[in-house]
Image (tube, rainbow, N blue to C red; front, top):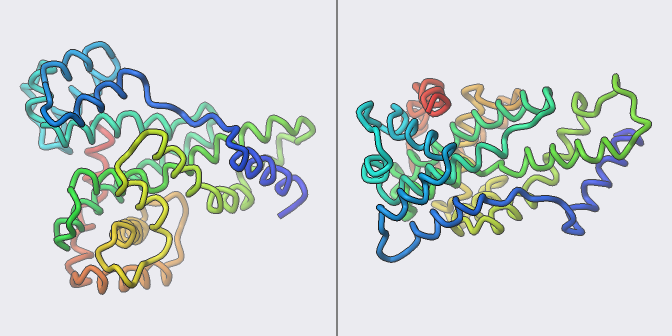
Length: 289
């Protein structure tokens, strides 16, 4: 790592340690909706009214409820139909997914392209995590498991944003030497994104399972085979093997990870691989939702 890269790395680490970074907060209306959905007795009419106050969210949820990714119906026209069709758990998932998508956008063209690929990978891991939970009979809610997979790398675009801010502080930086093209960016993101992802998950009051997945999915926990971190890591390896990734993975490492995951979850490797056959199509369905 050269001197400039080291300075960028230091700036970002210092800001994270000091807590002086702007973590995107959930919109007030989104927080109200999620609060309503967490009540012991949910009033879906009240939830529909809250959603209707946000035109963007209304449009997104209508598209989701009509999409193939959610097994939707083209005749859905009203928010009452949306909330009834999706139900409490899937509606909560959809609301968080809409909010999370904004974390994977950037005005910087190069960062934007990387974030698009990362979002596709996140969708793939979310889809596979939900399937693996069902197959393994892990005692985890399927919708929460989807969010765990979807958000496992949510800290990466946040670190990228911090690096952009750090770059602006170094006014002498030459344009042709942009750090975003170098290995320094990848190294910095890989080192720091877990702590930032956890910070966001905590501030958004996401379920503990999601927070655990973010913090634990880099390595397998051999002592707890059905741990959410193990399931997300297996899903991550499978998505990487299918080429749905930010960058090309090491094939040996990925295959080794799949072998360990299959053994821990007690799922035959061939059956595990069958899950990925239609994965690109399923990701495209989510992207079009």
